[in-house]
Every structure is written in C-alpha cells, then in structure tokens.
Image (cartoon, rainbow, N blue to C red; front, side):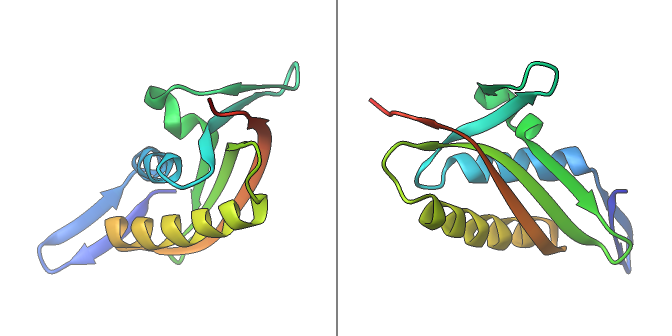
Length: 119
C-alpha cells in the first residue's frame, strides 16, 4: 500500500520505495551505522550495500491508517553499543521520515546483520 494524503488541491501519493530510500539515507548518517545489509536468504549471507542500493536493506509497509512501519537490516561499527546505536537510529529516522512524508511512523524494527571494523 502507498501512503496517501488528501489536500484541498488534490491527492498526494507516496510510494514505499521513496520512503525506503529516504529512510536509508537517514540511517547511514547515524552514528555507529556502517551501512545497510542485504541478506541472501538462499545462502544466509549478509552483504554490505553500496549507497545506490540503500532501499534494499529496508522494508516499508503502510497500514490502512497511513502509519508507516520500517524494518532495517543494518551493519554496525565494531565497539559501539548496539542499544545506543538502535535508539539513535529509531529517534532520528522517526523524526525525519515523519517530517519528510507528513505520515506517522508507527514501528521501527532493527535487525543487526553484522559488525564491521572501521579503519
């Protein structure tokens, strides 16, 4: 389902890929996030995605009340608190995606798929 808003001038429809790409760009700017992860279900392998494929590590769903649910598959930096990184990611993404879309962010699930040492 796509996000929809009615205004006095007409209807605004936001595709879930737009939300995923924006949320991915916000996520990689957060402290402790190395990048988004693509999980190969067949092999169980985790791969760090390039910046052009940020939306592949994110699943977006929008319910009938126009509330957004996001699932992030991320790779975090070695040596940082995963809890602190997750809380920062949730707060930042919730605020910025809500401001960007005008829709409510209902839930954000974070799946830490790997840890990388940053040089």
